[in-house]
Amino acid sequence: MQVYLDNNATTRTSAEAVAAMLPYFTEHFGNAASSHGFGAAVSPALRAARRQVQSLLGAAFEQEIMFCSGGTEANNSAIHAALAAQPGRDEIITSAVEHPAIMRPLAWAQKTRGITVRYVPVDAQGRLDMAAYRAALGARTALVSFMWANNETGTIFPVSELAAMAHAAGALFHTDAVQAAGKIRLDVKDTHIDLLSISAHKLHGPKGIGALYIRKGTKFQPLLLGGGQERGRRAGTENVPAIVGFGAAAAQVETGAWSRMAMLRDVFESRCRAAIPATRVNGDIASRLPNTSNISFEDADGEAILHHLAAAGIAASLGSACSSGSMEPSHVLLAMGVPLNALHGALRFSLSRETAAVEIDHLLALLPGIVARVRAQSPLWAERQSLNFA
Image 1 (tube, helix red, strand yellow):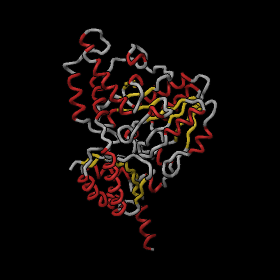
Image 2 (cartoon, helix red, strand yellow):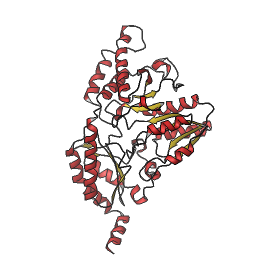
Image 3 (cartoon, helix red, strand yellow):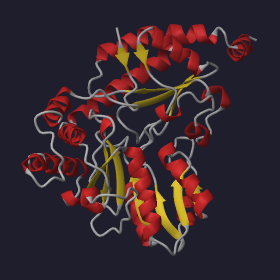
Image 4 (cartoon, one colour):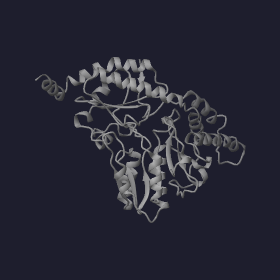
C-alpha cells in the first residue's frame, strides 16, 4: 500500500481543480491583458478565481487579492513593500521558527540594507514569547511578520492579537499563512493584518501559483516591474490556468474535513506512543493544525526511519521540504529546545482530507518494527537500555 503523509510539503491537485484548468490551456488560451475577444474570454475566469480566494481568506474586497507564483514570492513581495512603505523605520520583527521564505529575505535585508531584524523566541511547545514580542516593538519597527501556523509542528500563533499589537506601534503586519490556509478558518477583514501569503499547492491546487492579500489602503511597491498586470502590483502575464485551478481548490476547502483529520492525527499519536517507547510529540497540543504531527523517536536516526518508511511505500518527512537534503537539525525544534537525543529522531507526518483510517493503520503496523530496527543500530539506545536494566 502506498501511503502519502507529506501534505505539508505539497498536496495532490484535486480532480476538480485539474478539470477547471484544462480549457484554459487550449480552448480559452488568450492573454487576459489583450483587448480582443480571446483576452476578454478569460477575464471572467480570473475574476471568479479572485473571488474564490477572497472568500477563502474572508477578505472584504476582491481587489485585495494579488496573484503571484507562490508563497515565496508573496513573502518576498510583502517584505519589500513594507520596507518601502515605512522609510523612516528600519527594524523588522519575526519569530525564531519562520519558514526559510521569510528567514532568508530578512537576512538579505539585514546584510544589504542595514535593516535590524529582531527574532522573538518560542517556548518548548513552539508558542511565541509574548513578553519578548512586546519588548521588541518600538517606534523603529517597520514590519512584523509572524507565520499563522508552523510548517513543521503545526503550532498556531495568535495572529489577530499579534497584528493588533503591531498596529498599536505603527508597524505593518504580515503573516505567512501558507500552511494555515485550507486547514483552519481565516477571516482577515476582522483583523489588523495588512499582508498575507498563501500558496495553492498546499490546499489541493496546482504548484507555481499563490496569492498575496494586500489590505485596501496599504501602500504597496511591486517587487516585479514591467507590465501593469494585477492592478500594477505584479508584472508578468497572468498564469490563467493555474489561477483558475487555485480558485477551484479554494472553493473546495472542506471545513468538515478538519475535525476528521484531527481525529486521525490524535489516534495515530496515541497508538504510536503506546506502541513505541521513548516517543514525544513536538508542538502545542492545544493549538495546532488539525493535520500535522511532529514526533520524536528518542535515540533513533530519523533519516534512517524515513528511508525504511519510503522503502515500504510510506511518505513522510524530517521537517520542511524546503530544507530537505540538509544534515543540519531543524531550526524550529532547536528554537523549541528539543533535547539532542530527540532532535535527530524527529519526523513530520502531515495528513490531508484524502487520508484514510486504513492508511494510518498500515503505518502503525510497520512503524514500531522500523523504529526498533533503527534503534538496534544506535549506541545511545543501547546505553539507555543498559541503564534501564542496571
